[in-house]
Length: 435
Image 1: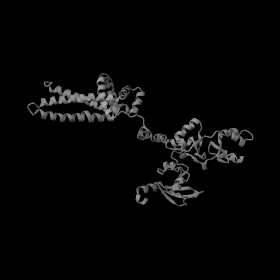
Image 2 (image 1 turned 180 degrees about the vertical axis):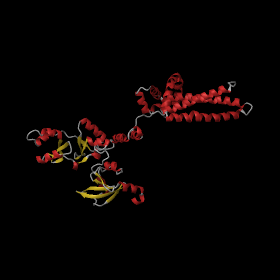
Image 3 (image 1 turned 30 degrees about the vertical axis):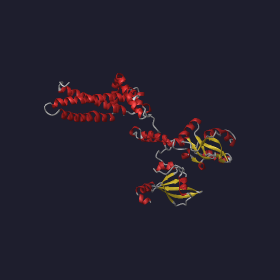
Image 4 (image 1 turned 120 degrees about the vertical axis):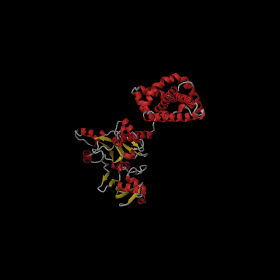
């Protein structure tokens, strides 16, 4: 081989560098493929994806094949470089100096043209590199399978010595938090509104029925002991299609009536309380602490859209509807998608008057605040827990860096508060003033 012309040696060296680049780039391309997109392409019968997926099912064999080829061509390139250096050094310098210079130059060539450049390209365009490579590696693996298996057997044996097994590869399944990150990082591929909806679905398991329920004292219903005139007025002016029917107090609930059924029955003569009782459907009771994703399934299984939340003693705490859960996903069902909750009233000076029964989650979402939600669910409950007393009107408190002005006290509870988000942001930017 020492007698071969330099042109042939340089040509062979160039071929080996190109092969090294192919091995390096294809390795990065195959290993950086998006596995979920790859699964999608496999289902779409993409031939390159099918071959790539088959190779990645046994990554140890694929890596063994690539490294076997890459190391072989690199060693051959090193040998050719030595021969070229020795021929060029004749009569000019010592063989040792020529070999050293050749090794340095080959290292730079391999590093730039066979490692950094192809791997960077493969990392940016993995499918463009990986799918064509899979057409070559699939038959090549079948040919070299005995050698690859032998190499992997020795390598896997060494890994077992440090208690690592190739069967213990990580699953491709994503946790809720990881899936939330995927959705948030989707960028323009998923519209922003759709991203919020998807994240809201993931958050359903963190939200319980107490966070969204209508409190007990705000439940609109029909007391069967009321006069028929009062019951008729409730039926006529009610803004709800389903109403709880109870006797004396809400804890003695008799069922739910649908106004559609009432309209049908009103054609009957002498329609009265007894007819209402016949229309009452069975009540669905929901234990407090039930996650919204669980309750959504309960509504679906029971084929109903409304239920009453009860505590451990069976006392009714509030009312939850299917619409309340859906609003957690898609937002308020209003004609103006940007409108605020009816409990949050904007003022001319940029502040907001907020009803004491407003849910903290609604306030945080509407005003971009971070009031604590692990505990009391309403702004009234939060302030009472913070102050450990019923404060006077015209009192201000600072909770989680947010100044809250108490405007009105009524019936031993906070009726109205004022929050100015602009003031809150200013105080966050000026911590000296906050103190």
